[in-house]
Length: 269
Image (tube, rainbow, N blue to C red; front, side, top):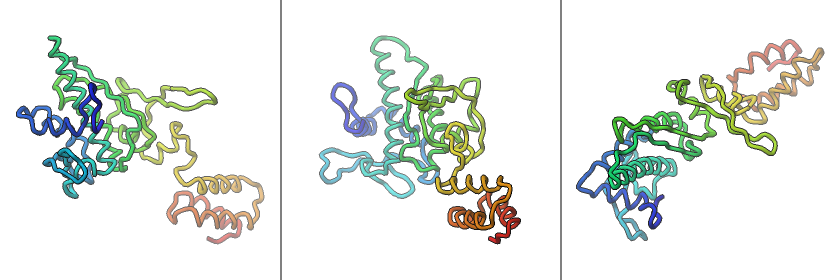
């Protein structure tokens, strides 16, 4: 995708320079608009800068401008590079389709499918919570009547939480892909608003009992089991209390439930 493949694609580095230096700026303007739409709040707008030459590189290299300076794209962070490629492939695919349609004398199609695996890869949580809604909205930047269908696979609770404001059950679907013994299953499930990343982590999609460390989860489950005993010993309550103290934050929501129980059994925390 970066350096191209002969007979298939020119690659981001060549196409970027070609679009930027072309007399007809339509494609480059679309590329800039898509980048702006996909930009994260902490970096500000991602804007193409002037190409530069860098050591040990025999070609001009595009640059990207953001809040922290101007960076050759080959030196940009993995997250920025990921989004640059997403924007490039969307624009490249549409441009190639328009060209092919023109060559055969047919109007361009008005439907486009974008498939992205591991959408959250390399992205900061601030970026994860805007990237999917932003990507779903770029169709109007390519054509006023283009319908964009998005298929995105993710392990990120932030990606799912980001859809709570825009998920439309009449046209959108949520699937759970998971292993069941030696087989893989794809199950359609209702989209439920769990409110935040913790809610999504403990939902059936992710299956965690607690949105905490594994050690904290194990200790809390032991604490809950101890609370169900008829006559828990003070020594056992004190031991669990010590483990909770080392594994939970002072304002963890489990403390009110545990503090009263511990005091009832002679343990002061």
